Image (cartoon, rainbow, N blue to C red; front, side, top):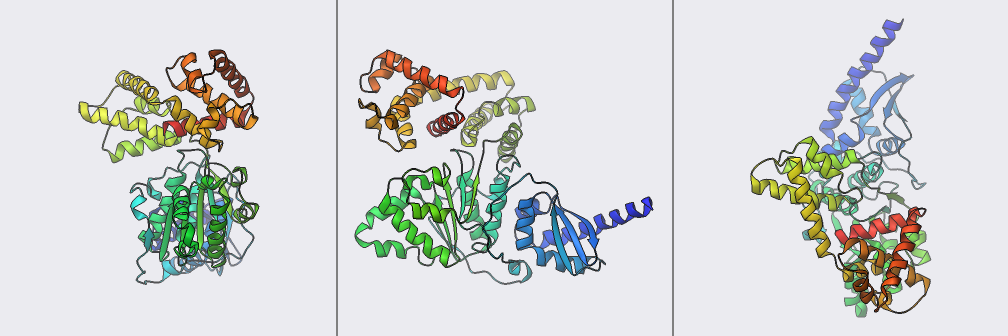
Length: 463
């Protein structure tokens, strides 16, 4: 009996290999297969239902909504199993989500019909980075997998998933813009929509100000948009007029079943001075945060860059570089670019001692480039105040605490003396700078939120 059971499982595995080959041939993009089906298996057949196992609840949600019909058709064609239905089970609950409660729409027509797609127009496509595609994004189940999977789902079927709007948030340099532009790249390459509009929140603000006398014309720019991509919506903070117009565009597109994807450096509800109506609308979709990458992911990112540049570096050197930056992928890539440039210039593989020396020089150069004025600008921007307020003699808590942070970072990230730092903050005494630094150092021991805020600001300064 045990032998018979083993043979039965093996038959299922063989059948599923055939199914997977057929699925892979049908999908429009390799990233879709790797993300959804690479770790899948056919568990069993109960009555007339094929039970397919997938890695997580998120995989189940996406595959069930978008590929169930395709899988069933291939099961009938490629196997001898008598099935009329297909169901899915999650192998684990590693990935969680908060989907909107609405009818899910199957989207397999493009995979099944051989139609000539309409070319996709992308507004501001010149702002896209060529390398910001799904196949160049390094996925990590612990830190960014949910954002990655949901982005692919949206790219494949804009406006037809429960993830509308899709909001990706997290600190600077973790891949939010990469995923946002990857969705746009995919929509253009695969023609999943007719018109994509990509814009940063700062550019949206600028365009709104330019057209303040003719708001109707400004709104008309978004009239026939199928997929709206907006980067860094935290810059809508304290801009009620801009928020009002964005909300009007947002509502029109959502009501027309058009797709919206947004990024932010924090959860939308944590952005200060945002209209309640806008926050309420943003709650309707899926909000996903991205965390700093693990060491394994940082190594994978570096290995990908080395491969694309045809550079060989030892595992020891790669691990050392990956350990130098833990919070910001963009900063890590900057460090690696420095090493790559030196390796190409020297026309040889660099050993560990040479790389350590290079990075010591690089850190020194970075420190010389960081100024107190830059730190003040970034701290003020993060807390939505002006740099002048940091230099003013006010003790209001909403200004005093950011000032302490700016003084702390000035001491950490520049070579200036305490006296010089004090001069930059309204001619304050060096003892004030010492007090501010000690205050922040003490608070960092127990305040995780403060640690995250400072990490974010540092990443912004270095980026």
